Amino acid sequence: MRKVALLTWLFILLAIIVRVFWQYELVYSLPTPVPNNYRVIDPGTPIDVSHILPLKKDKPVLLHFYNPDCPCSRFNIPHFKSLVNQFGNKITFAIVPVTAKELTAHDILKKFDLDIPVIFDTALMTACGVYSTPQAVLLDTNRQLYFRGNYNRTRYCTDTKTEYARMAINKLLQNNAAIIFDQFALKAYGCQLPKCSK
Image 1 (tube, rainbow, N blue to C red):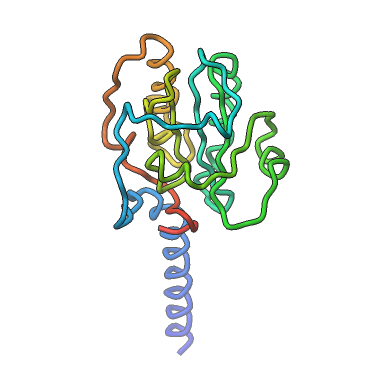
Image 2: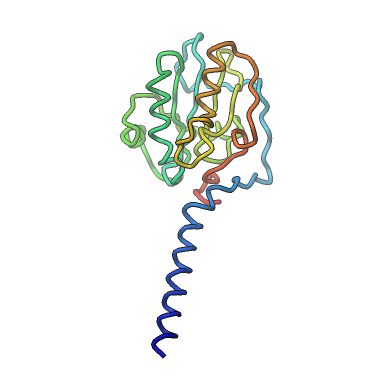
């Protein structure tokens, strides 16, 4: 009888571990489902941010779509900060929080330990074709969509070979030529918006 109880207990414990692993790891390795009403925004599409963001005409813009409830967004913070530190003098960076929580710009910037604009405008999600976080949207100096996609192929942004946002920034700053990425760069991975779920 004790053996059966022990095996039952071990089976339940294993099932809990598998569920937690699936919920917090494997589920984020799958693409985020595309919403039924999703409208594709093609590169070259004008994105008007002039009314919400003070801009210098000669600087591209990177909009960082961030959900504080999304584990992927939280893991991405150090990587995003490294981009700001590397390219902050050549690109205007801004954080676009997408959350139902009542947060202030100070709340957001405290998490990032940065001094950059925070834009509370969820209409930018639709305008840029974003339905998952974290996502990078890079606009060229003409305020046209240059890149909308992932920061990295891995959840923790540790794969230097797939630093898609950094690659897009470098390409844009070099010659503004069109870029071609694999499916992992452009297919959304992470937390589905507006809530943090898959």
